[in-house]
Image (tube, rainbow, N blue to C red; front, side, top):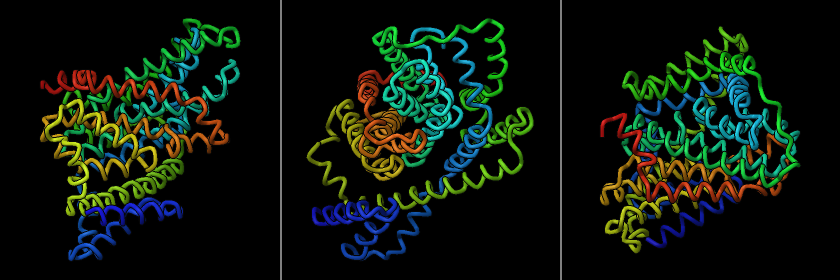
Length: 431
């Protein structure tokens, strides 16, 4: 078992350092294992790849990606930002709080951290810099606040976890709201104290008049219908997550093409082509990750490696801590979706054995995906910010530490106070 493990890890690390995309180390690792360490037909890889992308719940993934792409190209982000800034922008710390809340709201529209970094970051960063905030703080705020999109529905991470762990995606969506909102509050509190500490170097913006607030409310009513459609529809039981995803695409097209008239037919086609490309990448990773997970489970490698930790006889808090630590470390170095696909099947039997709620585990895992996406050395949102803001790596990560500590604090709160995630779920689904 140790020979197999060392061989797989060595080969995958070498391929990663040679700049191969993650799907290559996964597929080569599985092939080497099947050819050299077992007598199973290599055709099982194709079978497992198809199995990995077959669940019906995955239909929601391209739908939400397409809806997010359409709204990102249109007026939705500007209108949501305008609403929040009109109410809190003039307060001390109002502009960074606006950015934080906007990331939360836009996360409920896009479900994508990278889309949130681009849409909110391009609008808010110039305003924050003009007000006197340091660029390192601004970029760290946008990178980390955008990760709230992992928790706020529609979250692609929650959809994939629900598929892999055979857990209700609707319950996961509702359970992610509480931690997502609390995280936004914690980030906003830090923004306030940071602004107070900076003192007179920060310029406050002019307070909006009541007429300006009413205009902002009017412009944002239709974009706010998007999260209402998703959360309200699932909460009431009127639609499934997959149905909500398809309705969201129709809603986005009507909003941006016929009401705002911001997008043309060609823009929708471009968004559809972009969605096809992103979906192909995601599904290839999911399928190949399923094949690799099946192989290492067949060899019982995870069971052997986890045996010294005695997880099956441990407390729920200890198991949650081990799961959180495993996903956090994995997401620091590898794409979070790959880590999700590989590690989730490993921990599902342990979660069942100790009696943990799989919905709570899903929210915890998704939170660690958020932490890892904003954490050096290889957090994907860091590189998105480098590309968008045209800044060097060290400057982008300079101000991230306080936000990462807040994310760790949120993880600890979830471990010891699971009601943060489960309260709304229990109310919605009468648990």
